[in-house]
Image (tube, rainbow, N blue to C red):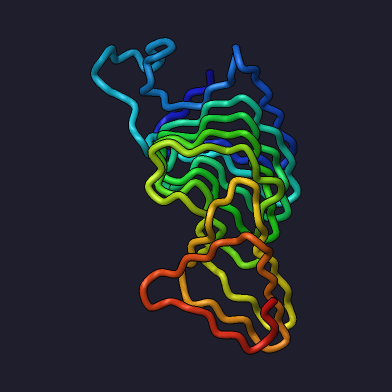
Length: 212
């Protein structure tokens, strides 16, 4: 059991291996969580809550495995349980993520794999923050009491002379578009068979390049 104080978290620039088992998961939680020991020594005066601690963050050049982990009460400032940046490709499998704000945020050219996880009491299970980021394998995940079941694309436009693919994943989660989509001249966007794309009020798609 790993307990974090207010605003703290973990930043990975090297390699992280957190491999629990079904009978002995690794638990990342709040110091206020007394389910296993009253670590902050205040009895019942405080209770754990969403936003107590920050996140587990994988940075440029890092690698990692989170398997059979429980990650709860995150979202202090990053507003997510797991933040993946740079060119990181961690594998997150058989984990319970939540309660928290969001589950996984992805930026830059990162592409984590999400396999067999359970998202519980979250806002978004996955948010992709930059157009060039994505996901590796995404399958076998389940959602429980998730406010917005989908993959949120915060930066969906494709810049000039770049290519992007909106992949179909076995879990079937739709892509939720966070702003107007522009496929610039010389750019290419491919949407795979079976993908569902959902637009919010006033949003849409403008194609000056190629759409397939």
